[in-house]
Image (spheres, rainbow, N blue to C red):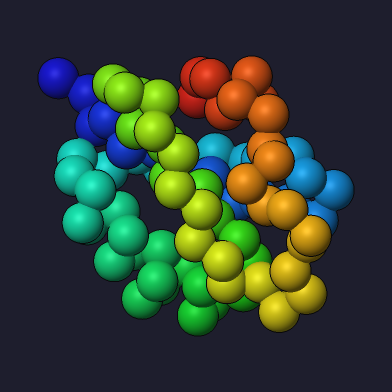
Length: 79
């Protein structure tokens, strides 16, 4: 069985970079908030591969206007 929650870093140009997969949503959120945002402030995307649900965690100091406008085709599969 694979870990269904993919974590992506949202780059300044709006593209995303896959970082890792985690087994459950709460652990994925905690990893982003407690580790990634502190180490590398940016916006992060958590994608549920089973349902397609996307969660944006905003941690960038220079927020883009609409980080939720990331096209679903960009994150439809692991990069």
